[in-house]
Amino acid sequence: MANDPSAKRLLWFVFAGSRGGLNRLKIISKLKENPFNTNQLANELGLDYKAIQHHIRVLEKNNLITRVGEKYAVTYFISTFLEANMETFEEIEGKLDKSK
Image 1: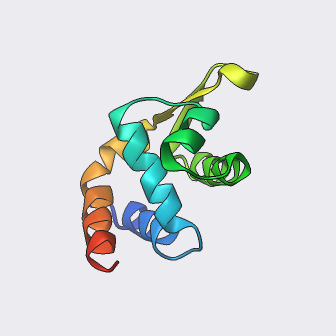
Image 2: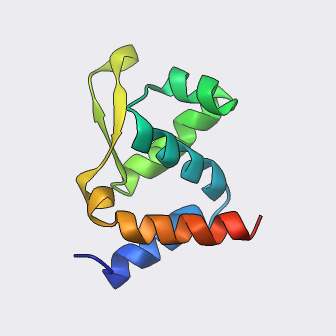
């Protein structure tokens, strides 16, 4: 599944081809370190809670993160789909870091 062209297109769109992609990139980078809930992510990244909620919805919709728990106890993890395509994610992450 590595280097799946459709996965690569999806990752490029979510992180580079749309507004907020850099914030979504930061969220995934944090979730690679540890699972977090929405409030923890907002504090860690210094972003508005509502903005984090929006980015979480986009990431969930595209199967890049998964949730465990309900309501305020929801914790987010990197999805198995993203884990399988981590090489592509890191390639995009590296290219976007250089473009800053």
